Image (tube, rainbow, N blue to C red; front, side, top):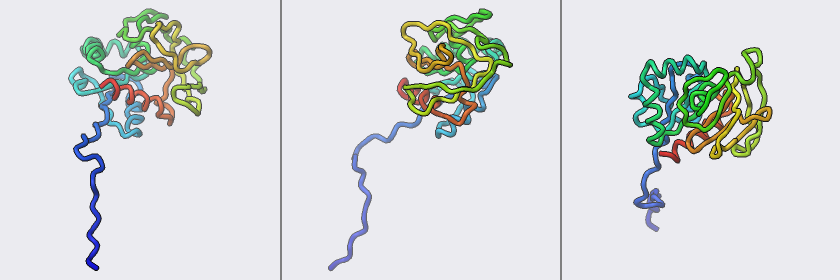
Length: 213
C-alpha cells in the first residue's frame, strides 16, 4: 500500500470575495468621555479613530459624539470648523451616535436653554431634564431590540427627550421618557453606556455603520 498523501485545505467557496473589512468608527475627541467610548469599541475588536479635525472624518463609516458639556462641545465644533463637515459626513452616508451631550448636539430642537445643534435627529430635547449633578443616578431599562438582560443605565445630568418625530424609533425608555432612540443611521442615548461593561449599544451602532457603508 502506498503512502497516504498529506491532507490539503480546499477553499469551499472558490473564487469567493474576501470578508469585508470591519467598519471604521471615529469618536469625537474634543471634550467629554471619548476615551471610554474608544475603549468600548476596542473591546469589540473595532479600531477607534479619535477625531479632532475635519480631515480625520475621511474614510470613517460612523462617528460617536460622547457625553460631556454640550455648550462647550458646540463651541469647540465651531472653533475647529467641524460643524459643517459633520453635517457633510452624515449627508454622505456616515452613521452618528450621540450619548447625553452628544444626543443634545444631534437633536432638531434643544431647550432649557435653547442651543444650536446639528439637527439631524428629529427630537426635541431638554438639557438637564432629570435635574442637576445631584440627581445623577443608576438604573436599568428593557430594550427588546437588544434582548436580555436589561440595559444598565448611568444617568449624569441627563437630558430628557420630550418629543420625537414620526420616523424616530424609541428603543428604550426611562421614567416614561425615551432614553434610547434611532432614526435611520442616527442613534442617541440620554445615558452613558460607555460607563458600563455592556457593549451591546456600541455593537449595534457598529452594525448600523456597516449597513450604511
